[in-house]
Image (cartoon, rainbow, N blue to C red; front, side, top):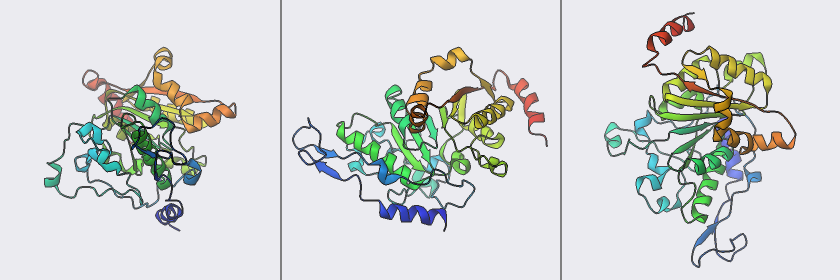
Length: 318
């Protein structure tokens, strides 16, 4: 059965969670103002699905033509002066919460292209990292990219729940889309637009013939460098030492990245979020396992252009 068909059938079985509840009903909050609606937090148990999806498969996921064809106000209404949270409508590019991307250049002229996500969590899972980042960077738009339909739905519902239950004060800067980042990153982000990129507990794809599926490889690192601003950072963390060595090896070899030293790495608050805030990290901690992590910075091509060019030439010579 195709991946898309599986995702649709799973969703049809579990799409009844997360309904609105008024104050006083079971599951309501203790101190909610009269007349305020309250939304139950989605139950993660209803959104469990297979841990991994083959990114090389044909997933038939709707994709914008390029970044100019995305209406980011769907995901971050408060950032665009839309006060009613778009009537709490959800958009996640899934079967349950679809997005109809713009089709014509004329339509794109009506959009505000000055406000775009600058932080991305690739393979965001259930969104633990983004909820921590949201508090640390309240003025930054954070996007989670997740290939699994049910998981993207969970994140979208949790974001909306926290917005509503906080009186539209929290999680206003978090959005999520179902997509295959390995194939679509340039459809979502312009050149030099991202400040931070997170890759947390990626699928190790242990078999040698599946190493090409790993989210960190030479080609993808070039794609990431294209989207990152000069000085932009890419964060990696895993509990698999062999995968960590692979990621570090490829980042070290790539001429557009340089590793950030240990002192600066440990002082970065994002490291704490990665090590403690994600679902996978909590699982590792419970099992008393180990985690390996690193931060790399995109080099300045303006000041190091000639040096980088010399390094790039043999790097891309086959």
